[in-house]
Length: 82
Image 1 (cartoon, rainbow, N blue to C red):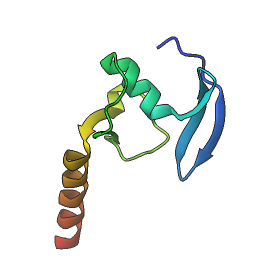
Image 2: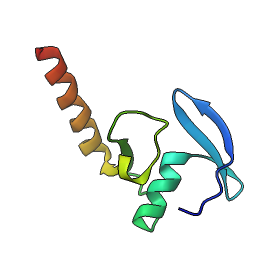
Image 3: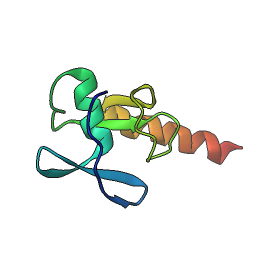
Image 4: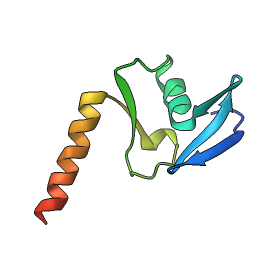
């Protein structure tokens, strides 16, 4: 993707990097590059394989906060039924 990756830290599985002088979550920076704009306040980035440190573009999906919550609630309900 052409971005220099300077890891600032890892917290709760999320990778933080230095980007344009700011400490940012790497998955958000990658997602913004994918969609060509900053994330809106109502958007979140979902890790498809649920591995928070896997910030490959093919593993990231931009969803609204409500879509993201619905997705995770559906997964939890499916696991509970097993």
